[in-house]
Length: 179
Picture 1: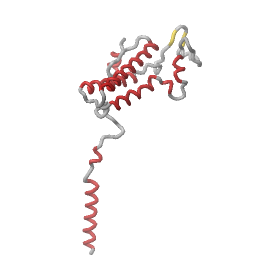
Picture 2 (picture 1 turned 120 degrees about the horizontal axis):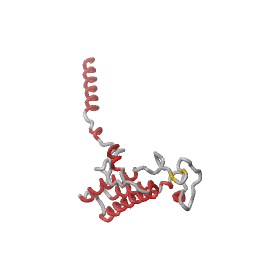
Picture 3 (picture 1 turned 60 degrees about the vertical axis):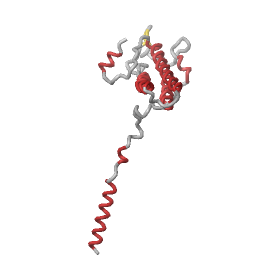
Picture 4 (picture 1 turned 90 degrees about the horizontal axis):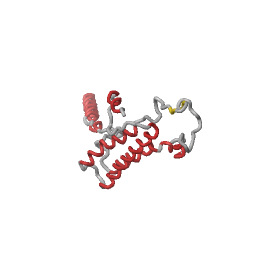
């Protein structure tokens, strides 16, 4: 009786161990919170979603507690902003801060990333959807990039034009920032 009990326990333990270690295919899944370029930019819906996400960067005064497009006229001949800051203004000149201040290339990088991933897929015919819609979204992204450059030109004058995604290497970035 005791031997039967030991054999039964051994068989149950071996079965439990075998069932817990036999199959781990569920661990070989790609992370659900990360999307790669190979999986994305394959349909017109993907292109539309990526384009729509860029509009917040163009009209950034609509977010948070801003006052909308009225704020876009600050420091022009139409409107003077309150809260004079001596860090920006000196007699007869506008000082650009070392950080922030509109020198951010993030939105330009997003646009260039779009072109580097979408244009080769479009030329190879790998994007599903209506050709007219695909061309519309590509054209829309060209407009968004042009608008971002236009706003930089308004603020700073001469501004480097970057048409590719640059690596995070200081020597390359310094070379590309030449005007």
